[in-house]
Length: 95
Image (cartoon, rainbow, N blue to C red):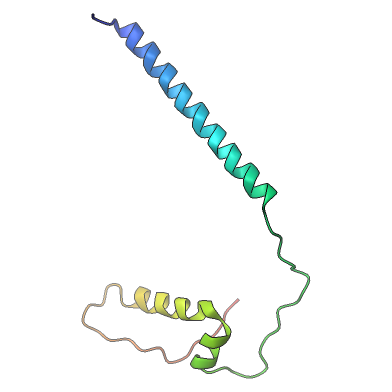
């Protein structure tokens, strides 16, 4: 059985509309679940700055993301420099 070009286009547009509708429903469902189960952080507490300069080991123990930031900075610095070695001399928190 041969299909005409009009039937093919009608089926294609209908199929695309169904997929778009399903994806929109999934997006709205995910956004609704995120709103329902969202946790709010208490932003009323001021962030305390450390009084003394922390060394690298103390900083890594205090802030678990500091090590990730250091590794990411090293990877970014050495991206185009093959064969060179880089060393972190100081770590400063910048806001």
